[in-house]
Amino acid sequence: MQTTARRKVGAVLIGLAAALLVTACAEPRPANTTTKFDGQYAGAYTFSGGERACVQAPVPPTMKIVDGRMSLQYSPREWDVYFEQYVTDSGAIDNQVTTHNGVIHLRGNIVGDTFTGTTVNPNCRYDVVMKKQ
Image (cartoon, rainbow, N blue to C red):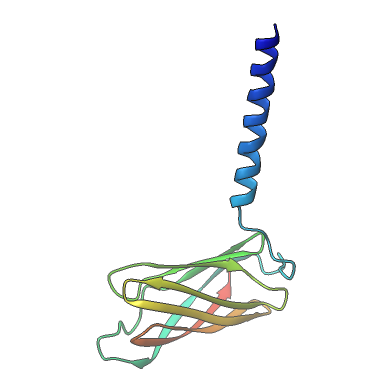
């Protein structure tokens, strides 16, 4: 009987440890974020500087914001770039990802229903304008 009780306690402790591990691994939501910008945004990237080899008009981006977390994918050449971050309560987005070609930055701001910003990679610069759908 003691063995069975110890197994049950052991199973409960393992379950609690697993739950704590999952919670510890989840990215915490920063205090200065909001859901007021939630929705889907569509628009265009416009080439604004860099090498001639830059794609003049990458695949039109779609930005989604769900529960305050922004995700955006764009294709500057033959690979995809994924940006993800929480949007601040002022609408600011400042994110970067590292790819095999270097660091790519996405910076801008949401005002009303419009995101205006830039994406800069080691070779190209794009102006970005997207409107909430």
